Amino acid sequence: MNTNEFKEGTNRRNFLGTLATGAAAVGLTTIAPSLSALAGEAHFDPKVYGDPEEIFKKITGKHRIVFDSPHPHEIYPFAWPRVFLLTNEATGSPNKDCSVMVVLRHSSIGYAMDDKVWAKYNLGKVFEANDPETKQPATRNPFWKPKSGAYTVPGIGEILIGVNQLQENGVLFVVCAAAINVYSAIVAQSMNLKHEDVKKDFTDALLPGIQPVPSGVWALGRAQDKGCGYIFAG
Image (cartoon, helix red, strand yellow):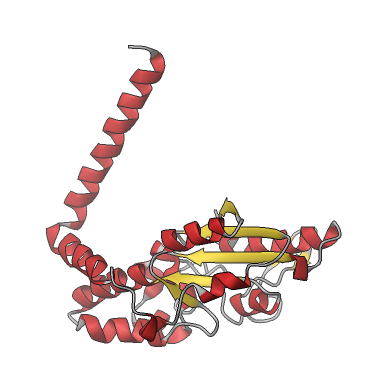
């Protein structure tokens, strides 16, 4: 066995061990409703969410990029789209020449929702998303209509990275409906609530202009079909 084969075997065993440990930690009672919820979202209903293909027709710019945000990661899921726009503008490509999409999936889906559900369901703890100002689990969506001066970078100054601020410059946002279904089931179970009630709250709380898609990975594939380069938003 050569060195690479040994490393691959070791990495695979470590990965499988991590999966087994994680499964034991959450327990079958948590896994079962989650998988059931995921299966239940296999049939995406455009009558509920709108046609997910439509937003991809807006990807028409010369410079096309999709940012993948599977987890809350400080300011990066929102800072990098702004950096992309600013540096393109600095090199002669205005916003109209850029098509930028952010895919909020897995535990980043909270950023697609308004403050009410963050407070009601303690989403800062659910998604392990800290408020950049307090450094504690967020009780609001810190990237929806942030106050003036909320985000600054040394040497640059204030950066406008709120969802609404990025949308004003043409950035497109989509959110994983499968993850909404799964996480609403988990939250409902943990709080002894009805899944359909929590899911409705999550869906009703979606921010203006954010399009639900069948899954985040589906959206990443569609964006790349439209010629977008891929960047991990971390």
